[in-house]
Length: 394
Image 1 (cartoon, rainbow, N blue to C red):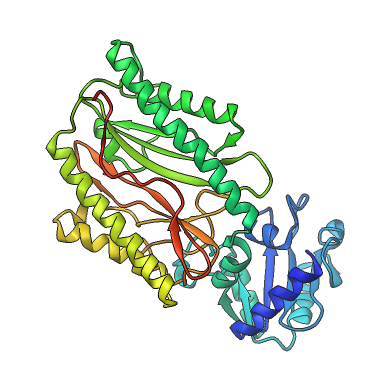
Image 2: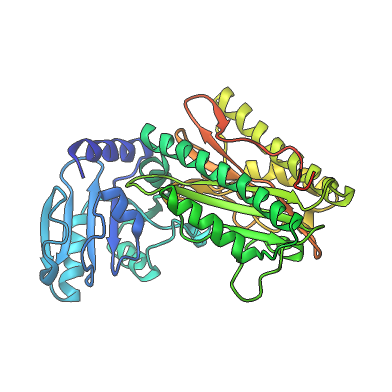
């Protein structure tokens, strides 16, 4: 961690009214700590370590003697321990005089992406006289906010993802016209191969869903059990990827197509509702950001959800409206969520998130997904927006 970043963290702590930020890890349970501190894989981490950044002054590190060099890349004084009594004594020493301590903690685990420190460690810190507060907003600033280079990587990955997505629709149409066999799994694997050829990586192959499988928001096509793609099928493509380079961030979209010459009214009707919900959420974000009003994730979710609820399909919109996007496809910034959690994190500049409302009926499902980037005083969608279901055989 550079001296400049240390100063930025301490400035943010003072602005938040916190006495310090306590990082803790054991067996790599907290990837946020490793990334914020610049530790990389952080060695073995078979013993507990703590790193305390005070709002003013010199940081402190507490490490086990058999892994004493674990935090040597970080500035600050070092205390070593072997036994648990020595650990507690050392922790008390580095926290002495500090009252409000930020940790990767979320009250009632309301934001699971942040709630990474175990309850016992939280209890120990409290026993030592400190009040534990959530580091959620600090994490947004130092983990979720993008650099200009990361934003550029997002756009470059987006061009490849968008192209391969449209090529996948065309490939499905070609196979259907020629009466050739093609399954969801086979098309998904073809798309994954195109990404590899273009140095785009992801944690899994794209989601290709037809028929009732499109009604399962997290359906994953497999070699056994995938549906064949046939004329008359509604097809959902959920596609994400990032450039294969350090620090790159994801691009994540969902598009819909129909294997026919014209889209049946029952599909078009549901897509129209979902599109209206998407656009209502986008407009809410744009207006809020341009006006300088504090905007929270749960509010964006509400803007989209109300459209679907008023259309009579509220119970079929079963997930949050969107998620933070970063070096992981599900990042550590504010989620657009008032359903699964009430995400009361403020949307901050230089962060990106998806807006992806959906309606999932027993026989089929419909979703549209775009990415929204918040800059300085403005917000924008980073790629094309689907306005109608694509009639693939038109």
